[in-house]
Length: 101
Image (tube, rainbow, N blue to C red; front, side, top):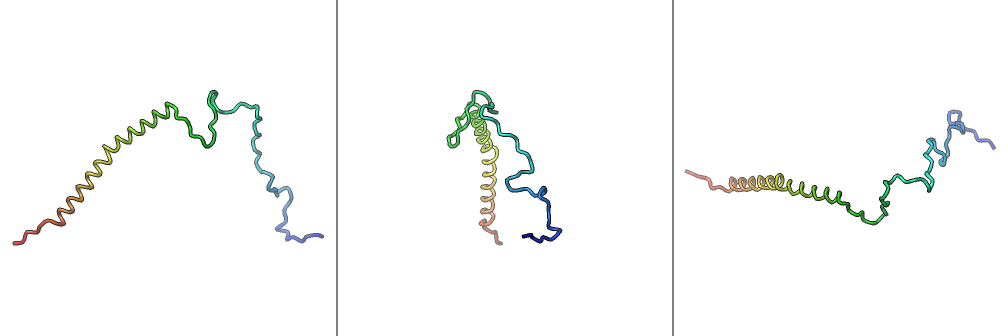
């Protein structure tokens, strides 16, 4: 049995790639004996376990907390003071007694 296909819909088998074929070559998988790309002396991180904090990480975290505390005093408190002052002025202007003569 021969299928009749429109001439514009015909294609060659070389142009067609099956789903299990790739058009780009993948790099070869490393052998189990190959050295890993991890620095020597460090164990690989297991999934699901928390990472142990190093002294460098601790210093970075403490520095970030110090910067956050400094921003509270330099940004947040003055902004809050301005907002409270605006509310007080608005309430005063809205409720001040009018002088009638």
